[in-house]
Length: 420
Image 1: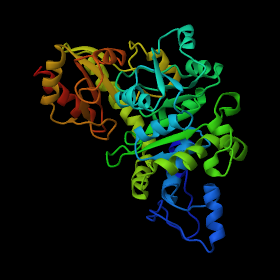
Image 2: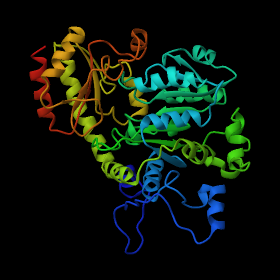
Image 3: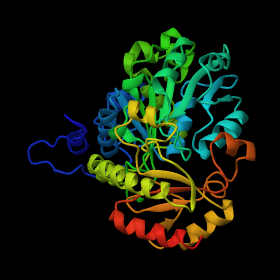
Image 4: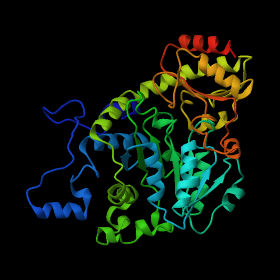
């Protein structure tokens, strides 16, 4: 099936007389005929459903759909994108380990890697995505367990050279984890370019309607865990009676360890109703992404021609620094545009306060146009040095183009810029 068809049909196929739409199975638990069957599932939760902290039929249908869209062997939904990122790292890291990340990533992820993981004894080494291969290789240590980056960085909108970073990571026998939130599998499938694990904040384009927060981890099934130093996956897990994930589950070792061990202990599994709402968003994802990209190109060109705008950052523009990478990896540059208003922070604030159609809110990738000032909102915890590293300027505005008529979006921009 093509992506548009997968959006509608993957993950759930009703049998004779069953509901056409994915049903909401609103239950925490499942009944068994005897104690022996329950005990067997506690030994291996993949045998059947036992408790909705591990798995739920509604959520499982969505997981299967997302795995199909990304080209992975399996997926696990979480309660937020932050939870997905956290578990994707903790699934292979422990105190004393080190990870490598590009600097141009979401501010919440910077905080997670810089402070929270540090408290847990996990070091993060940040590297510039434009660093030479030699410089990146030099960042690796014997205890390095993964490399992390974003397909389209939030809000710097730089494009990751996925194949290059995958090759470097694999040379050191560690996986590449890619946050594909802004691109979605409709615009880019990182696994096709060598990524091993993909994460998303499903709260963004996948949901599309700003009605539920969620995240997901997708396992490519391609990484050879035996080639590196990953005892948590390759050696017996005493919390599961000595089960060895690679021996028991092969290509699905990573994602099943995340479910059986981390979801068991952290419990960040979404509710059935949340997954139901996410599925409604996924059903129109292919159609929506095309329109987001079309509207954004019109808006980006308009902003680039404005004498009130210092600079426009949008990889879809031919003059953008990442345009060549966008051509290589993306089928469209998404609907998010970053631009710098002339006059710095004060001017950017006046512009944002003057908008009438666009909503000033802490969100992005909605069906409705929304705007945000990263330096003072989502990334305000970052130091000045970290802001520069993340590609964020004081006058930068993150503009998420919605699905309104593009002429109405342009009219709103025109009247707001006139007040700068």
